[in-house]
Each structure stands twice: as structure tokens, then as C-alpha cells.
Image (cartoon, rainbow, N blue to C red; front, side, top):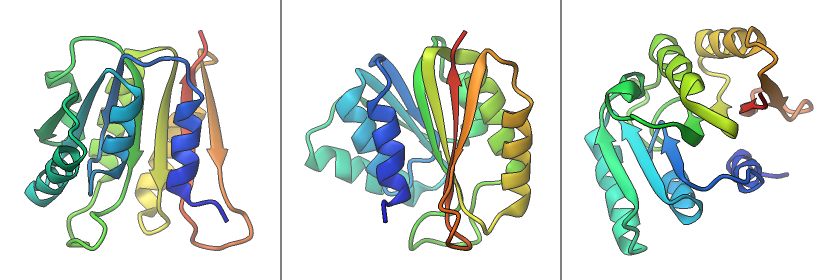
Length: 175
């Protein structure tokens, strides 16, 4: 079975754009590292010092210099961006092997998604990895995506024969 993170990276590899990507949830740094290999510039957000520190160490060990780490909520993305983006990725939930009480919340996720959607370049892609432990966040993300105009293609990638599997929602600007 393909891992959900591998699938999200495969989908990102297919987009033709390479200027600016945003990792909305830096976590342990794996998505940030992947984005740094494809895009000229990367911003990575996380609210936890542990996530920022671990991501910084991972990037330094790979001699990555094109990433700006931001210890702030992804809902404040507009405070840091003044240009359109080619890609954004969300790996929602909590920091792997971290404090499960500190997790993404539906309101801040939707606020950041609304901001990022407005900044998305033509053929740009947003990847949202959702986990079954936050039903409100899933419901609100699905509601937002399903109501976007036809300027966007919104897709769901899901393993349907395994309960409680994480899944992906993509939002691609097509017009």
C-alpha cells in the first residue's frame, strides 16, 4: 500500500510550477525537505518550537538554504506572503510522536486555506492530508472544497477498504 505522504509528494511532482511553495504544517520537516528540492523558495509554518527546531536540523543536515521557517499559525500566512504561490501542503493533526493535545484546529485551517486559495497560481496545487481523529476539521475542509467555483478542481484520494485511514484532498487552480 502506498503511504499517504508518498502519494502527496507524487502529486506535487506532477505540477509544472517551481517558484514558491508553502508547508503549512512543518512537523518533523519531511514535507519541507521535499518541497525544498523542487521549488526555488519554501516557507514552512508551525506553532511548536520542537517542530521548527527539528525541521531546521533536518534542513541543515541536507545543506538546504531556500527555506524560511516561521514559528506561527498557518492562519497568519497573509502576514508573510506578498506573492502568489505554486503549491501548499497541509499535513493536519498533531506532531508525530509529539503532544497529541497540540493539534491543528478547524478554524485556523479554514482561515489559512481561504487565504492560500486566493494566492494560488494557475495550475498551482494545494494538498491537504487529513486524519480521521478530527471530524470537525475534515467536515469543514470537505465543505470548503466542495463549494469552490469551477476555477478549481477539487479531488479526494482515499483508501476505501481500510477504516480510519488518512486521506488527501487536493485543490488545483485550473482557471
